[in-house]
Length: 363
Image (spheres, rainbow, N blue to C red):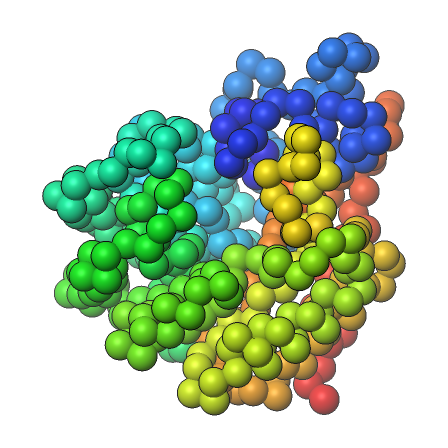
């Protein structure tokens, strides 16, 4: 959820949606100001009451559409950075409406032990620092999974996504962590949750398809399943209508083709980061066009059909979608603000999803 802070994601800036051609993307709780220098605003006083009201409405939109759970990008409560990625989860947990939709976490593994928001790649933390920080994360997960609305799969296993687990503690270097560190940390996570009696976690590695080393994590039972955070690296000027076909051929029947591999199919509500581009943009080779009417429904239908046709491979019986609220990055189901003065939320994406969730049946 957009919090009004400039540092919610990598290279985030206040003015991503400032150009008029992107105002239509602004989420439903944003309003026009009439000031051309700052044309859009949400919660300028950082009021917790205003923020909570927006979260309560988001829960209503998502739950009414039939969404089972949100996967929150997670940074620890103890962490001195990434407040924007923590505010959404805190508001969800504080909501009287939270029972309407479950939640789980996406662990940002490379960010473990980070103490400054933008640590340069030259910063390296010691194994002791990484272990100490990881223990705090593990303790928090042992508490979070006791929440009545924490998403569980396979008869009660807490669902935990691990973003790029092979980079655990490596920060912004885009390097792989020493294997013994990854093994030690993932084994501790599973061991601690089992020993505290909250369940054997179902650990899902969000892998990078350009790296084959993730298979070792699955083979050695450090993770239970694989998926991707989003489907990228497909080319330029891509059409959303071809996205599911690409996921199907290149990922499900490509990267994830091993018969014994357990998979949660990755799906996408879109990915068009044009508002973020600066002189070529920080996210090359990633864009897909906006989904036209009916294309999101076809995309989801394909994913649900795959799960139904591969019950052993898709044992968790779920899919994950990027994203609910990446409005500037171009993947969002969350309704947009509509036009002044009434600001009736535009719900086309979530309405299309609602119809699929209501009407889909196994073939």
